[in-house]
Image (cartoon, rainbow, N blue to C red):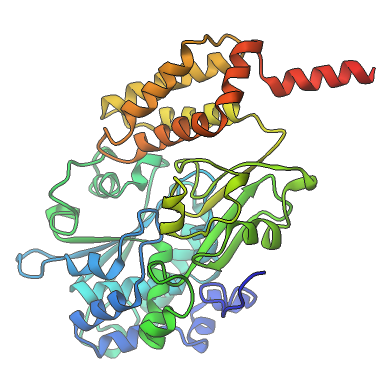
Length: 434
């Protein structure tokens, strides 16, 4: 059964007036910012460290620790950059969070700015998010009009400007250093690290880059405390997580759950089970770039440690569900083709590996596979993983390696039959019925 807990990020989702600044303030909005204004920057960072808040964008790096890495004595300005590019296939929870309560993001951004001494913050939004950018523009204007942004925020002597920057629809710009290049007007390609963004990020200045959901947790930590935040979740993965579940389920959507909640609970109790009562075949825990898991992993907890032990990653918590009628080879082909197209072309393993993997997978799926294709795919997956500037190539490798690991028999059947076995079985059943 689902553990009972107080909704946090979603507690006002049934109250449409929370989208505007008046409704947000009436519900305690900007109290976290007021609290932060009365604290030393180091105390703000320490409070976030104590909460155990980890980045919700995929890597799960401790947020307070990231803020603590930012040097304050360089003579350069410091920047907060909000990563709202949300381009990972299967992911749309940041979108709904902002649609329903945009001022919570602005408040979390302002608190992060206070923690590192930032006076100009940037929100980098995915280019396709037209409506969401309008919602944010309206919220930013309201915050300026009410004195929560601009000069002397909330009656203090602290200034803070927030700039909304629209991307141009490139998946690679979800990678933080490619995002920084894009913000600077350069081609969206990853940078070599070190130096890391905390030391030399936007405009070669110290920069904190946080995901939308990460920052939206911050105001409550300031007002309710680190202990309250830790009341749900696990010891190493405290708090809640927004989960997007899609694919072959009865009730796809976004759900807030305590970290560590078993996948079975999300699938069966929240999403209503596999569509049409069919059998679960495979699922991705954190979008298409995370290794596939199977029905054997139904009771794995949705947290960083449990999924790592199971051979996958929490990522963006974008769960995509496949049932018994879905062809894993076809699914792998579609995912790998996406990464091949979205590769920025900077790294040879990604640029060439994705292109070759797409060709081989296409051949196998459409009946022209050869026995030596499978060793080639195994070798390709091994040689792409961890060999590029960013994790885009790792997404390609994760699809290849996990699908071969769990569904090698399906690949072999494609080669042996010269066709997808699911389609062959379907034709056979139709012939018998006729």
